Every structure is written in structure tokens, then in C-alpha cells.
Image 1 (cartoon, rainbow, N blue to C red):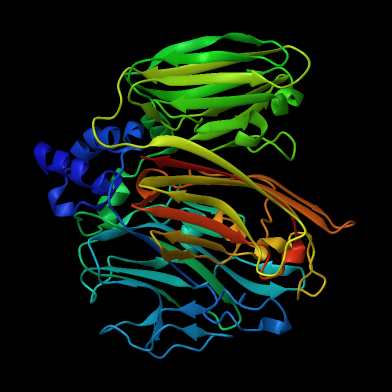
Image 2 (image 1 turned 90 degrees about the vertical axis):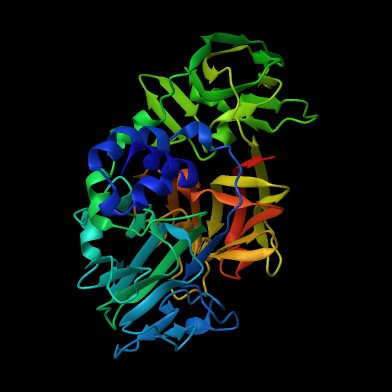
Length: 531
């Protein structure tokens, strides 16, 4: 592909372009040399664009169902778009349609004929039950992906190879196996049509999935071979966050008197904050330090949160690392950083307040650039919400409810719940059965399969720690003696997975699976750009 064609690819599609360009048009060296540096431009994240996001999932299609005598509407497995060919019927199987494309042969989990577009995320888990609980290791199952030409798959492989990280291009760091689930952020682009099938499924297993689709202005047909030669490493992704225009605006120990507020940044010109980093000698000081940010002429702060809440540390100090945010504790120091671009047109005020009765000294590092994005962009908003028991029937925890044009970036959720004694499997974390619901511009576009599934986990997060580029399990706890469970987790919708909205966006979680008594406390932080 000629250099000007690569640039057209970059301008029109962002991250999708590199990953989707047809192999006959791509020179691997040119793409790897010029593509990733341009396509993974973090400064482009605040830019607003028209687009449509929707999710296909294995959610229970029958909200009045009474699965195993409990949890109405919570049979979130073995639901498919259709089942094509002579395939065994799975337990409690549900179908959206009996119609099948010509030559389709398998359990269809995604179908779309409204291209151009791309798949931004696939999440999958399965389970066959043993004496010790669900075992989610994949066996002979296959996944087939069709793009545009529905006669010949562009990819056909074993899911167990995704699990092991040996199925190029579905390999780390963009495709990960963690907490008994597979999450893949490899973009799968199509010009007009898409179909994704599972096959060789076992009748003694249950299957859960989520497939997130994004519209695009134009697209190239997905080519697995080309993509396999151009996939970046974790270090490549880290380097993509480095900005040549970065300036150090503050790099010093800041003394904050008791009950006082001190400025970190006071600008009367355009610019972009690129990273905020805080270093403390005592983690116990986190609840007493509050960050505030006011962009341009806004009357109210767009960010006003204690560092403890902003960085998901309300259940104790726990390290984690994702692309936009990390927390690290070592050598009696606690370091917290966030690197989402924060642009402003005419000014910015960043302050740090000390709500305690004693002075606090914190090391603060702020970097930025003296320019704002050239096109329409949104200000970064960070919105915190809390819900406390008792919860009534049909209760939900609202994470974000936004009016205007913007882009949704991420969810940090910290919760506490209790076991449901009537559940088929009572567990202190039964509240995680609650599904996520997302409404974009008045249309329900996201209907998920469970709280831990939303954060790329499964089966109540069997892992004690999970770090990936786009999501992290910060903390999970289970006090079986008191039937109390806790969770702190974060998931990012960044780069190609951001959720655009033109008029409004709402995201909420059910409190349990229609079992509000399982919820004790929900505390969330939502990250989004708003025009």
C-alpha cells in the first residue's frame, strides 16, 4: 500500500485501519513502521465522531423465565442468533431466529448486514460442572468468522488456541485468557456483512458470549494473516502512549495544609493534560486528598473525587495496571497515575484539597502539551455514584446518565454484596448475577450476561488478580462465614472500543439477578468525554 493510502486508512478509521487493511494492499514494513505510531495516538481519544455501537450476547431472551426455580430472566447461556445445519440441541437452548445464511453450519453468535463496521470486542466463557464447580477449559470447540463473503470464512480455528495464546492474530496482548474467560479486542472488520459461528459445542456444557459491534465510515475486509504479521506487543502499546509534545508542567513535592486547597495547574490558554501521577508515603492519606478539575469556562468541576475513589482503592490498597490507569505500591510508597488525554480550549484549573486536620505532602507529576485537538472534542468528565441497601424490587445501580454528545470511556465499580440462600449456588458474590444494561441515544444497545462478565471475568472471578490492557480485577473478596462478598474492577472503552453517543448515554447494573437483597453497596466511577 502506498504511503498516501496508509494515511487515508489512518484518517478514516483510526485503529481499525491498520488491523483491517486487505493483505493484497499492505506492505507489512510500511504498516508496522508508520501505522502503529499514528493509529495508537492517545491524543485522538477525545475526538467525537458519529457512530453506532451495539452488543450481541447470550442473555436470557425470556425475562419471565424461572431457571432452576430461581433467578427469573437469568438464564444467560446457550442463546444464539440461530443454529444452522444438523447440530445437537443444547440444554435450555434459545434462538432469535431459525433462518440461516446459505452454507452456514454452526451456532451463530453474531450476524450483521449493516456494514461497514467492525467487531471491537469478543468475550466468551463456557462451563461444564464438576464436583468442585464449573470448569471453563475449552475442548474441541471452534470459532468461524465470515466477513463479506459468507461462503468462505476469513478465520476458522479452535477456541482452545485463543485460550493458550497460540492462535495468531488472536494472541496477547489483545486476546487474553483470565478468570476462566476469553476477551479479545482484535478488530474484525467487514464492508457489508458479518457472521460469527461457534461449532463442535458439547451438549454437557453451557456457553456465554458477548460480541460488541461498531459502525465505521468505511472498512477493509478482515485478513487474519496480515494482521498476524502486524500485531503489536505490550511494549509497543506502552510506547504508543508516549507523546513527543509532552512537557513537564509539575514535578515536585506539594505541601497541602490541613483543610486547604492548593493549585496544581492554572492555565489560561489551550492545552491537553496528558498524565497525572501522585506518589504518597502513606496510603492511609488517600481518602483525605481530593482532586478537582475545571475545564475552560465550566461553572462546576468535571472531576471532583478523593484519590481513593478515583483509583478504586476503597477496599484497601491493591495494585493493578491497565493502559490508562495504574496503581503500584513498593518500598513504602504508593504511586497512582491516570493518562487519559484531558484537553481544554481556553483554560484549566487543577487543584488538590486536604480534607484532614493534618498537613499532607504528596509528590505530583503533571505532563501536558500546549495544544488542544484540532477537531471537535469533549472534556473529560469523571462521575461518581453510590447506591446503598435496602434496595426495592427491580432496583438498579446507575453508573452514568449523560445528556449531550460524547464518548463513553470506562467504568470503575466497587461493590459489596451477600449470598442469596435461594440461589442454586449460594455464594457471597451472588450479586454479580446482575446484568449490565446500556442505552445509547434512547435505544437499548447493551444487554449483558453478568457483572463480572462485563469486566472480562467469569464465574464470580475465580482469579485473585487480573491485569489486561482494557480491564483489571483490582480486588475480589469472599467472607463465607458472614456471607459477604466484595469486588473492585475496572473496564475501559478506549481507542477502537469507545462508545459514541449523539444525544444521551445511560449505563446501569441490575442489583443481583432481580434479587435486590443480594446488594449492600455499589460505588462506581464513570469516565466519559462530553462536548
